[in-house]
Amino acid sequence: MNETQTETKTEVALDVPWNVVVHNDPVNLMTYVTMVFRRVFGFSKEKAEQHMMEVHQKGRSVVWTGGRERAELYVQQLHSYLLLATMERSA
Amino acid sequence: MNIERDEEGGFVFSEVDPPLVAMFQAIPAAADPEGNKNALDRLFPDPAARKETRLNEEWAEYVRPELREGFENASTTVEADLAPLMAGEEGWTIPLGHVDAWLNTLNQARLVLAARYDVGEEDMNRTAPYPSENERSLAVSQIHVYGLLQECLLQGMEE
Picture: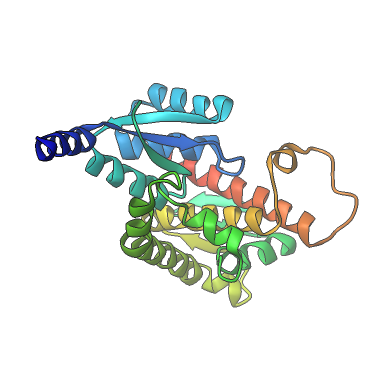
């Protein structure tokens, strides 16, 4: 019985969606951040600018939510562009 | 300083003023984070909160070396493009295919300088000149000049 409960919990933990979060950085240019969002996520210019402004004004923006592997890939891409990005379990 | 586009879309810089020549020559050195923990932490941040110990450890082992290699390759490309300027000429060309490497290296340089000299939002928004010429005020100027070059490349790419 205990074993079944443990397995179920593990599966649930693996299935939890992850948020990819971009944090504000006073040095990165707004135009550069917008370009990165368009390239990495394929956002339209308007959507990229919305997220960029959210980062700038609120300090962070959740730019993507989904499976862990894909989230890791996105964070790696954002780091390769030197954006301050993290991933966190979605509440 | 004049900026023109060549037939292949590359950016041709000419008649660069001496103070700017010195700043552009310093790009590869400015982008090097070695020996400064703050700069290294900024260029290679953890991907998750501290409690995600395993994820952060695996990242440091497998992903960070890849990122480092990418940054170094971009910086090497920039250094090669700057060779004419280093040799005393008053201009240089950024081929269209090298623009990404330039954007990346300029960003590295800006972030490393900001981390080394603890440059924050207040410095970035400051409009008044600094009271004296010191290393830190020079670093802030470098960050702004490199930013202008980035803007110029980004705008050129959109045209």
